[in-house]
Length: 269
Image (tube, rainbow, N blue to C red; front, side, top):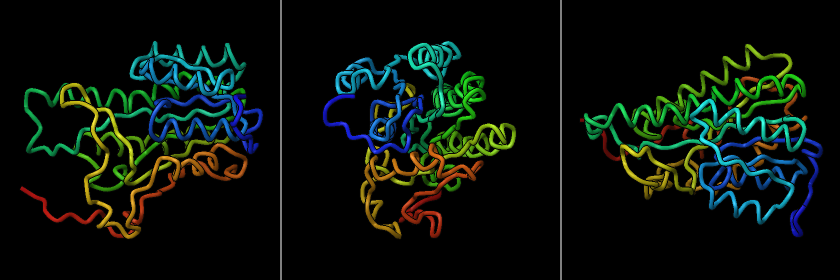
């Protein structure tokens, strides 16, 4: 382990595979898992950020350059993790892209199919493929899956119709897989609300943008914008023995959106 990385120990001896893990929430989770004693496979499409992560953490992590929206990419990341670390105990499906909060009135008709396919392929198909490919390894270890959901998994105004549809699908996927894979594998999720990070966009709609609307914190019951690190304890909880009685659970950490909704000053056609 690299100098300066503390070992708290709640995940000692565990091997975690985390997608979308070189920036934002995924990176924060990966870093915290290492601090907790886990060996971590970091999966991303950014070679530069993967190299930087490897330089920081050394042999504690494995970096895999992979596209989670493809079957080949998922097979690659699982096989690489098992080859290097011998097993997988924790699968964190976190890779995701945003739709820029583009409403249906503003979605270009000639781009909507491409944008939809890109978002769904990463945000939904990527999670399903990952779960399928990692399943044999988690059955061996009686491990767990943790999916990154969103307040958009339950409510409107967390994105446009494409992103919101994709995150609603994740809520259903968590519940269905929890039902199908019990009792050997626990399947849970974390649903962040607003978060201070940038998210990739489908090529059909644009480039990386902030995932929050400026000034939105003023409408929240807890009126501040959390950092990625503010959510990592929830992932550690779900990955640890402390959550052994939890499956099919989605922890909503949304600054109170779930009790009041995201107040908008304007809307409608």
